[in-house]
Image: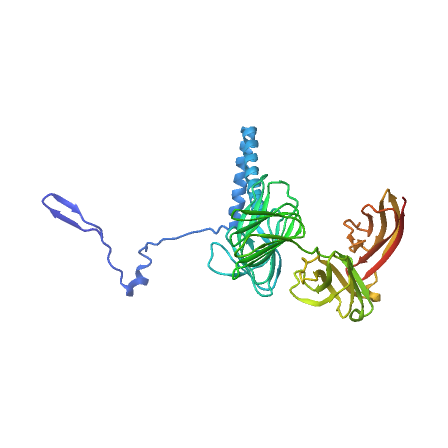
Length: 447
């Protein structure tokens, strides 16, 4: 209904009003009055549909671009591919330059430079400059840097990653600082002669050359340290003092006094069991295993250690003998690692020898495997061994792993140059079921 007001200026239209609806008469007036209402409609679109539309739109754009300007199309595609490749390359490069754990045993903690918390290390942990690594009483860790330099952190040791420079096509530089404890350092054959690897301790630095190995110890209580070279050369510096160390030499750095250099015993060279060789026995517990190594000048005794771990945190057997060999029994079937240390009359010990691995296997019909030596051929002083085994088996010839075994089990192996005379070639195999076999053949190298 409309209301009008009559005044001096004429009729004026007032704001329209609507008479309230009586609830009791709703049913009567519903047919005569239309109540305003709002209706909302929608359509659901999934993420998959959106993605399809985006792909179609991109395809249309690139299609039009290709028709209008092929050169611009090619340049655009090239830029996108380059951006993706660069992103992937940067990610790979970053992962290759970071230091990583390759062996962990016992309690090993890490505190990142950007964190205040210590966390248990694992094989996914990467290390950067400023990070701390701490090992427990039975903890050992081996850390490898991008240039293949490795640091073995011994028990009860605290180190800081001091440097990790891995510039592309530039000399590398890595270093760790020993706050307390001991570290073994090994360097590879670097591509650049200017690459560096070092260990710092107290106010001193030991810098190793390419293809070198050393053991560094630092005692924060006595303020005394030592560096022992097992291979290659190193330079030890403290303030203005500087000395060169060669293989089997030791530098002693006392708290008061100058650095001294002395000769040390050479580590023994393991002979048998051959590295990676399986040993077969009807009753492993009663099987006598013969261990042998080369003699060391001035050594009066040798200590052999056998462990189930590469880091030797748990020795299952240990024996000190005066000769260069011993027989040991009482081992369960499984994988074992062994090494030897020499000791002289002054009770001074050598560094640990290279570590060899062997597998003790119980002999049985279910463990038999196929291993045949089909032919041998001489190529000068090199012998070629031709044979056949089971697909997937592992073969060792004179302690060296055969790298390529065909899908049908066939293999060929070329030995290292042999000296003139008669040689016995020992071939040992092991299949996936744990079965083993051993064959040997005699070869005469003409003079």
